[in-house]
Length: 272
Length: 159
Image 1 (cartoon, each protein chain N blue to C red):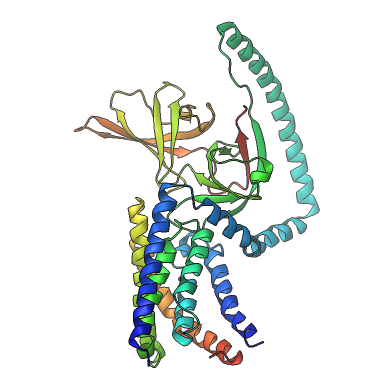
Image 2 (cartoon, helix red, strand yellow):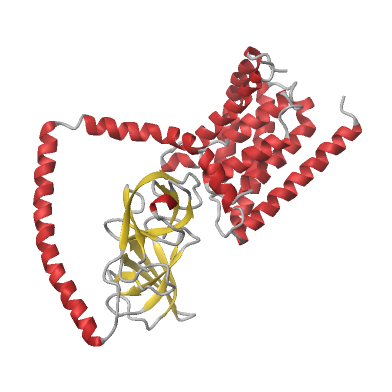
C-alpha cells in the first residue's frame, strides 16, 4: 500500500517536472540558452541517428553497386554531353559576369560577385509532420553557422537554424514559421514569401491589388534583411487570388528548389 | 550484476526512440504511434518504483531533441501521462488487455492534446486525422507491446 506521504511526494514531483518542462519550452521558444542542451543531447544520440539512416544509405549503396555497366556508360555519355553544354554556357556567363562587373564599376557600386559555398549532403528529414526541417552532414567544424542560406541546384531551400559539430539543421522556406524576403524579377516589386507547410507552395500575403504580378513571374531573393544573399531564384508564381473587399491580393508560388527530393545541397557562406 | 539487468529498460526505450525517428513515407507519418509513451506506460505500470516521472522527463528531452520539437513539448506530455498512470496503475494492471488498451488510448490522447496544444501555441495546426490516428494505432498495438515487454521483463527477472 502507498502511504499518504508517498502519494504526496510523487504529486509534488510531478508538479515540479511539469513546471520545469513548461519553463523549458518558454525559454527554448524565446531565448537561445537551451541550445547547449540540444547540441549535447543530439551529439550523444548521433550513433542512433546513424543507425536509423543505415537502411536508406545501405539501399543507395546496393543500388549503386548493382547499376549495370551499360547504364553507367549511358549515364557517362549523357553527363559528358551535359558537361559540354554547361561549359559552353559558362563561357558566355563569364563574359557576362565580367561585363556586369565592368558596368557596376562604371556605376560606382560595389557588389559581391560570388559567394563561398560548402557542399553538404542530406542526413535526414525531420520526422515531425508539422514542421519542415532537414539535417545535413556539415556542421560548425566545416564553417557552417546559424543563418547561412542553403540552396540546391535549382534555388533557395532554406537557412541554417541549429549547428552541431558535424551536422546542422535547416529550416526549409516552406516551413509555416519561415518567411523569406523576395523580389519579382519582371516588375521589381518586393514582398515576403511565407511557408505554408507544403513543399509545393509559398504564399505572398497582402500585396496591393494594383501590383504588377502575372502568373509564371519569377521570384528571387531580394537580399533585404541580410539573411539571404540577393538574386537567387526562389519560386514561380502559380496562382493569384484577389480580395476585392480589402483590396489586397494573395499570391501563391511554387518553390524552385526541390525541397522534397534534393540530396545534395550547398551552404552559402557570405563573404566578409 | 543485479543492477545490470535493468539495462533492458534503457534498451527498450532506445528501441522506442529508434522507432520514433525511423523514416516513414509521408502518408504513414501521421499514424506513427508514440512508441516512447507506450514503453514508458508499460514500465511505469510494471515497475513503478523504478521507472517513474524522471524517466518520463529525460525520455521526453531526448525525444524533443531527436524530433526537433520545442524542448519540453514531449517532455510535458510524457510527464503528464506517466503522472496520471502512477495514480491508476494498480487498478489498470489487473484488467484484461483489451480494457487496458482503451485506457492506453486515453493516455495517448492526452499526450496528443498536450503536443497539439503547444503546436497550436506556435501557430501550427494539427490535422484531425493525425490527432486521432496515432493514438488509435497506439491502442491497437498496445497488447503486443505489453506481451513483448512482459516476456522480456520475466526473462530478465525484473521486479
